[in-house]
Length: 226
Image (cartoon, rainbow, N blue to C red; front, side, top):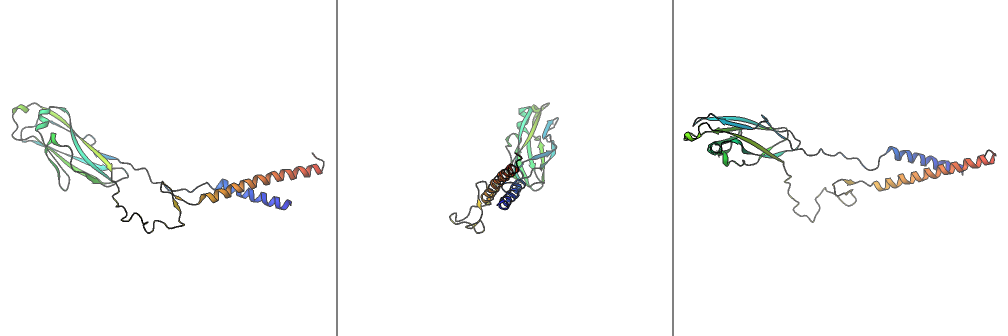
């Protein structure tokens, strides 16, 4: 009988330590949180227009960098920061990349060009040209204005089309008996039976310890030591 008790205790001890060393549940590799990080060089994206004569123009280059971990779509807008409204409304603006002209017209009418895509770890170089029209009169003398260019970016969305027949599961997405998909997309891998095994081992371990204590006390009583 004592051999059986000791066997149960040994099994309980092994199961108990296995429970301690093996964590509950499965570990999964989580993707990094999506980061949209669009930077420009130079960081100060403004043009100060002053002392231009009719027909003069000035060109600046802005490098747009995607330093996040997601492909993005971005647009560019402009806003008068300070100075003369009259001069701001007179100026012409041209924005181009290495392939095409993105905008050409009056600066005060510029509200953004068509959305541009930019992959991770890549960059676009934009050429921004401001021109003071040749037909401008003397009313613009001694005027100045400052224009700020703003960039807005968002993560590109998944455009994968939906299944043509939603009523039928796609091949390869699962069959009866496969792991169940939880709402957050992680598979349920049958942890419940293992948990019951751990609990059973802990109970057997506790019972075995109790039996050893009782047996030890009986031996001591039989020897007259208690």
